[in-house]
Amino acid sequence: MKIVVCIKEVVDVSFSFALDQQTLEPLAEDVFFKVNPADLCAAEIALQLKEQHGAEVTYLSFGPPRVEKTLRECLSLGGDHAVRIWDSSIAPGSQGKTYLLAKVIQSLEADLVLCGSQSLDEGRGETPAALAELLDLPQMVGVTACELAAAQGVVTASRKLERGYREEIECALPALLALEAGMVVPRYAPLAQRLKAFREPVQLLEPSAIGVDPAELKQWDALRTLERRA
Image (tube, rainbow, N blue to C red; front, top):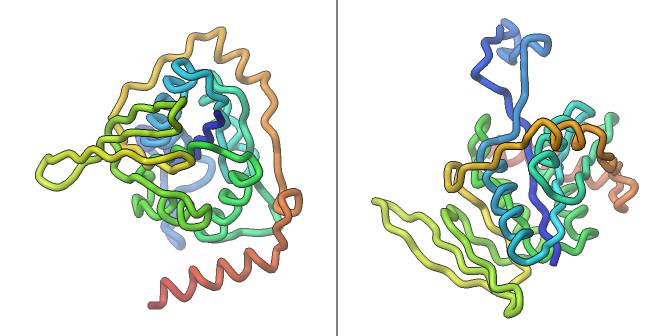
């Protein structure tokens, strides 16, 4: 079976940084990045399922060359492949990024897609739902624990509700799960694995390589602009 884990880099706020007084964005030279905590939990769950069921794990991210460091951090924990999608000539909004991620996931023929439920920076939690819609997959959000019955093609998840309640849901594969940060403690990668991971190749895909025309991305950006005005 194939598992795809969507990874996002976020600003590491444990380091101090200055803001541009005009844009109120962090100054690039002051910023350090790290793996989004919820995505790191998703990577750990993927590796546990790999150990239990012999799954193939691929990490997928959208971003510039510096994102390769983030992907290699995940590879140092374990996993099989890392894929970065990027095109410096375009700057799609969140909808465009999600569309590109969905196209890559389709090409990878994933049986299970794992995402963090929210990112540490924006925290809107819209990417898992948008991915599930684009991929026409059932989704489970707010997941705090999950078990996979690979032979039956079924995943069972516990998801959080209000006031501390939990709900058990069973879903047929393929499916998408949005995992909560803190649901597991990610493993520690020893130095040897880190050094090996930084020698591993990270596949670069441009939109044209997956059959996406730049005009399509402009349409998604336009949709995002309309949503912000609404």
